[in-house]
Length: 430
Image 1: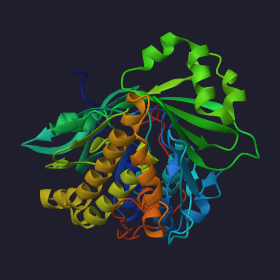
Image 2: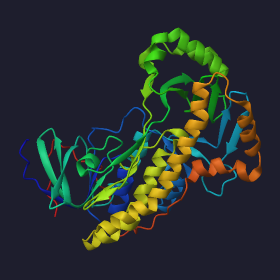
Image 3: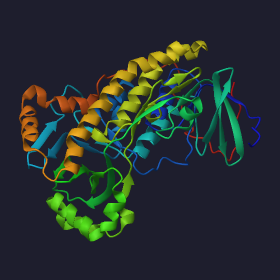
Image 4: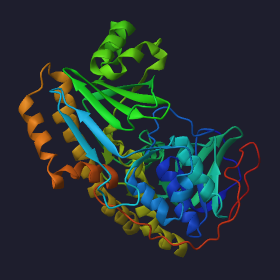
């Protein structure tokens, strides 16, 4: 192994990964007056398949931080209703407009813009630093306690010492692997092929689902274009490609007749990206000196697009619980266990709902040439009742349990650079 450089950085909290969970936790802890170092292995936030649905629960968290109005000045689209067409041709609609919230809509903002916004706000606090192009190598473990981590950049390998190390490094988390935490994985019955088709100004602003015998697709309004998620049986991507682009375009035209005149825009398979759907969770999210949150603790299915918002709720609860112990300089496994205790049930229920939808709807659609009509009619009738009809909207908008920001604002916001160029020397911190 490369020798560790002597620029030993010491912080209250070191966060591996600057996705939604890592960025939000970094902001909240820096706001509470703590020294926080966030490491991001890439040089920017531009990534395929990053979710960009900001739900009412996250918008309300931003409002509690005084950031919602500024955030909504970013270019975005707002969707207040979702529609799904069953194979029997029944339209199931639900709306966010009846919910008790200042934000009765889903805001669609590219995740790179969201992360730039959050880290720019975090960088106003003197305790926050973000290192780009910094890939985590391993955890520093001494006497059974995680004391920090090592990361590498263009200049070599470096060591960070921290009172708490947080793994927010995604579903392929290096830190949770190094911590030896056990993962329970499930096998969703589907994958997704993602691509774009042009959108016309007069077309409705919505998220829509279309399904037919053996096929289904999600349509997401992105202003200039429709983002299409074509749902396929798990592992069938090569079979779809082998059938050829003409067959793929014919299938799309039949499934989404409203867009049939645009399917010829798909000229090459490079325009169609594969999203491999995964779902898992850790049995225990923590060990001494280490905590996993977001996808590192529980990879979510894309069903209902709740992944970002669940991860941000993890960060809010983690900050609520941990800011004071970190400020005192003493963090215990009881503190870390409290974070999991407050978040595990909402996560498990959300994953169970996603699994139910996958098995009872998507799997039925994908594996049957003629899904049974009676369950579709029963669901259609139930969702037309005023009380029951709002349940899906509340689940998508707020999740199972909606946390509020309880960590204080003890640090003064100042202008501060948003990231450190790793070509420059990284200063030691005490």
